[in-house]
Image 1 (cartoon, rainbow, N blue to C red):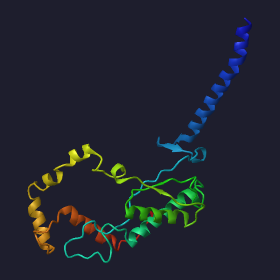
Image 2 (image 1 turned 180 degrees about the vertical axis):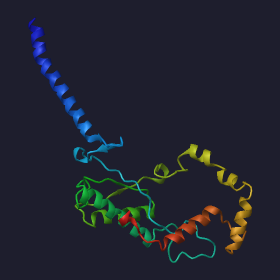
Image 3 (image 1 turned 90 degrees about the vertical axis):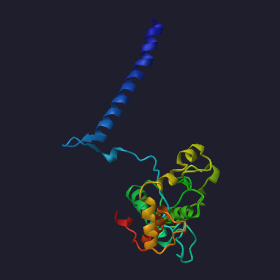
Length: 228
């Protein structure tokens, strides 16, 4: 009997506190998930706390990976980040600063290695893009060294890696050749090359043409991230 009374005295308050904590949690969730007149869920941001932000981005505008025959790169090497690409990444960093430093005080205004983990593939245009973004995000202010973590090409997972993924090699093998066997593809490519003055013997395909066309367009495209 004494054991039972002792047990009730110990466990009853615990049960009450657990129920109270659950009720408070449910009330917090209910308040945070109010619904509008149209039935859509409305979130009261003042009751929410931001814990982590993950930003995934590609590199900025670059030069073509394979320039067309008789085309000059203007002193740039293949796949190099252009001036426009640098501006794009800096503007993206400024946009992130506005969101997570000024609007929401989530990050310190200066780079702190204890707050930010930076990861990139070990490709020059990607490393340069990352540096430009960080420059825009922290306005070149830092409290410690900025370390950009990379991985070996043989084990990289941030891009389709044909070196270490046998399954990927198997699934993509022969697809390019099969695409050019589609009716009319070879004829269309021949017409395009003739119209551009490219010798039909030159190894130029539609992917190469598209890459050069996009790179050419990006040379004069103004950066629009500020207002987006």
